[in-house]
Length: 418
Image 1 (cartoon, rainbow, N blue to C red):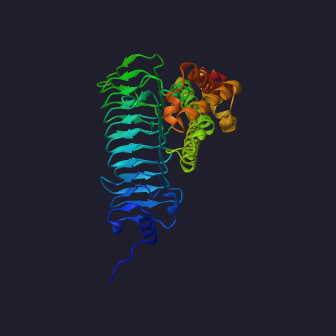
Image 2: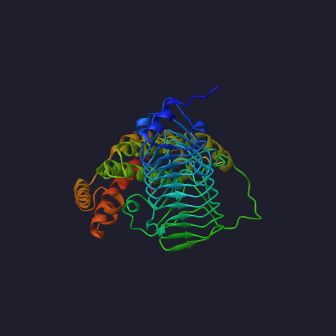
Image 3: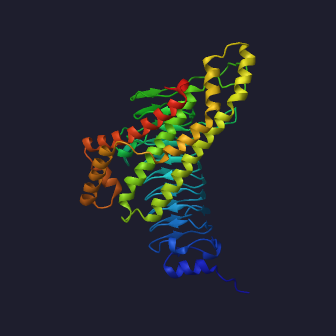
């Protein structure tokens, strides 16, 4: 008895998509084949495509090193996804992911970002050219820095971002570089040496190197530093779960991260939008970017709210240990976080669409439009073509958004103010 091919597979073949061994490919009934380009797309054996939001741009290559499962991902032009599972993530033009990947929701690969084999990501945002080595777990991070393919931020092989605490919370996002300067593609790269890790939440500035084999636990705001992690072998201290001996740094780093995401959303809305219709950026990719960044903001606010919910239990345990009648500053901070949690969450949600410094914003958008007139809708060429003065105006606009979000949040919780 002859086995009939899936009608969607037949339609894609007739459309011009190259499907190697079509009987080994599965395409869900919900997949809209009009969202799959017929220009030089190659789908290899063992590929599975699911979800109505799945989109594949021209020249994309899927599953060329093993089975690949795609679910509601947007895959830009000339992207290569070797093998693995890819769920609710987006890959802009020329992004590359090696075999054995586990790429989950809220992940964004901007242009030419790449990962080698066996990499796990979730709620991870990689700016253009950022490169991840092999055997990496790098969830709940944003990484920028670098100026091009030969001068990029990199994460060495076997690196881990520790994003889940013994207190069972994930208020642990780490910011490598930032948004206001990072989007300008003119900052020195960050290098995280292999066989190492960092304990979130951390903020690491541009032009920083963390030595291979280091486990790092602090922030670094001074550029041009080589960092070494401390050796914790041989010692022990009493385990005091749920205590949270400090909360101020956790709060500051979470709000810093969220404020940078809000600034990135304005960048997508007002700058990235200008490039729709170019060779490498479609309306579908723009909507995918917005969707994934919305997921990222939702996740961070949710995790921060859950962290605030843990404060009453932490206060009780801390009071039992300290046996103090008067509340310490730490107890006051925790109490304030819990009591004002709803106000904090509502304010963060309200600030999602914040825009400030209209003069700098409008001036910068004019620079972008001038660049488009010169270079066409080539995002990387336009951004790299900006002068130092022009990028500074754009950075000032975005940094004002970050600063305003932080100011309004710390007006609510002044005891945690930086």
